[in-house]
Image 1 (cartoon, rainbow, N blue to C red):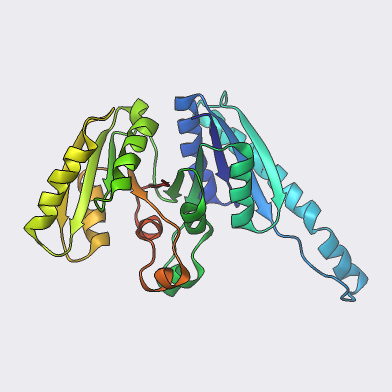
Image 2 (tube, rainbow, N blue to C red; image 1 turned 180 degrees about the vertical axis):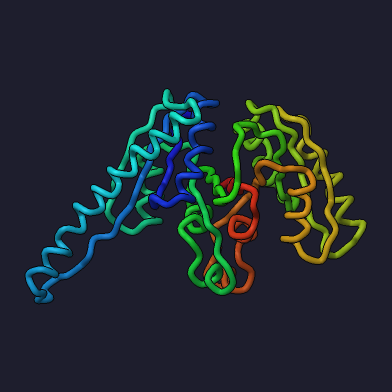
Length: 279
């Protein structure tokens, strides 16, 4: 783990997530690249009064100055945490936000994307999503989405992994253990049994045998409930889980409309950071 990409919209929520990026970079001896994406105002051949035309022409300069002014804030955050030694460089890109972030991650050879999320509600999360949600689902590297109200003390003692007993979950768990093993956490592998059947518990036993030994200790638990989100969030609170990890896959529009991504759902609603893994 050598390179962390930190997308920022210059908000307080983003600055809050920067603490996670700093702590992880320090633990892994990694560098951080911050990226802020802005969109150019397209005025084309439209005739505008001189003052308004000058305003639109100055948008690029405004974006640069706004980003430039935010850099000392990030430097001060690092200094306040005693992490000013972490290597940080900055990028300002013009274009579509999600597309630019994903392209930067590919270009930079990013190992992990860390970004803040303020959440979304109701129809907005299904039809519009969020930048964090789209990056979670489409990035080729792991993505850590950090809720605005989460506090990070530099320790990761408990990690939860939500499994559906797929073969790719085995690989994801081993990758997760390698990724965060240096924190020496307890890994909780959980499945929510909405059907209340003995078969689900038997599947967990079989899945445990498939996973075998890993770099970190793993406990296996079947959670019962009628609502997956509530069962998971109750477990996260009871076990004081620091990060919940989930395997995410690209989904079609129809899938998104009728059964939107569980990873997105947790990122929007949970108060626990969500780590999206891609296999």
